[in-house]
Length: 305
Image 1 (cartoon, rainbow, N blue to C red):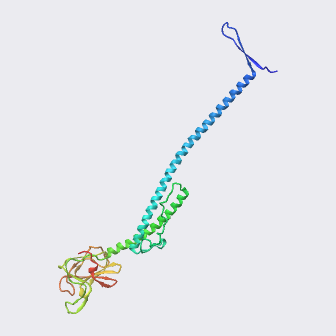
Image 2 (image 1 turned 90 degrees about the vertical axis):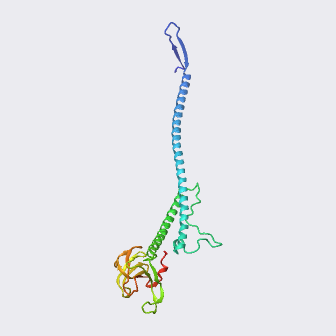
Image 3 (image 1 turned 135 degrees about the vertical axis):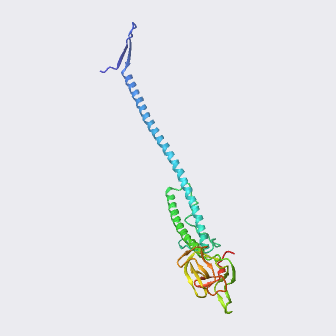
């Protein structure tokens, strides 16, 4: 049979008696199992600690990333709200411009008329009403809003391009309108019916006569292209400038012409000199403005005093 106990002998270095200790086998087994249990618990605790430490580190990183994403998401919401509000203002301004310029936009039901809703009706809402953003809005919902913002921005861009083309055309038209005096002097004969200085008959005077010293400078009253430069019966030396939009100006009795047919001129360009050629009673400039071939009173176009 296996021994149930062990004897531990302690032998001193000197003359002291030998000491014996009896240790039960069951006790050693219990101690061994206890040590194994302690070692196991310590190993398990160590493994668990490192796992918890790793999880805590990962959780800390995730929390930081989550806070960063929340901050970025909040910033995106604020920017969407700002862009939406800006597009709202742009659209209201667009409507006002279209009301002023008589332009319509069938795509968004914008037309000439009052900008305020009639009594008993509500103003139509547009896709740019992005001011009711919530902090719980999902990224998917934000993407939807961004898509609608992109579509509305595209429509606004097209609308503003149309307005730009309109105003560019208006700018060109204004530049082509003869709005300044072609020469400085005294108006001796106005537009309308008058007595012919040679025959004393009442005739239609298609322009105005501006008396000025011989050789006085004549300037183009607006942008245009010279379409005629030569002699024309009783008007002597004549220049005709086409300003576009059906507007032409004529200059008669010139002493000399400083431009030729085909030349481009700008408002204020020197084009001729006052003279006395043709059928004339003295040095003066005969100035006409014709719209689609019909003579108009030049004074209606002159803005300066």
